[in-house]
Length: 293
Image: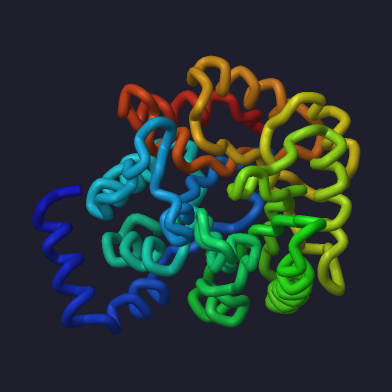
């Protein structure tokens, strides 16, 4: 990102807030499907939950200019289909002109701040279905952490169901990210066994008055064949925090992408903050894994 673009963004934010709506109205949209069987969506909604760490770097995403620069690099690479993010990041990129001909998915429930005593209370604090439709975006994503010992889960399920129904009423994708979760040592952890993911998928895919426009977003785990057999819904694979060596991560993605029903990748930190900081190379490798129709 050029210095003059960053300065212009700061001035627009301060003195020309109307330009956000103008940029959204003028944005060139792209149809779905996108001309191939699988998509690559870049995700950038972790900061809204206070989750700024990547691997061993607890404050990796502290610089907004740095994050935007990485996002613009990723979005400019051939084969990248779109963005999943919260309003603040989406609007920065709209003002920078980086979202033409891209799919845009608005992240909706970010209220479960990382490490908070109320972390399982995943309230809808970002986009709602009406604002996503008004901005001419393509869908909304919601986190659906199911904790059997935490009463806040009931409200999350109800809110997600309502969002699925409303998004479908607007003809928009409802992207659900389900997890079977619990507190361990004061921290929220996800059970990534096949049995737990199948339980989470079974609950998540049934939310709302229709599943006609529901997509799933799930992690790559062991026994993905068994996990994918639990649903007929289109499914995107999430990248997660790049704790493993990149070659092992890419190999696991490549194998899972060949399963029936898998429609691509939604990846953020693993591509935006690779160990060598070469965002373009990491994104190009991810693109190379996708099946081309």
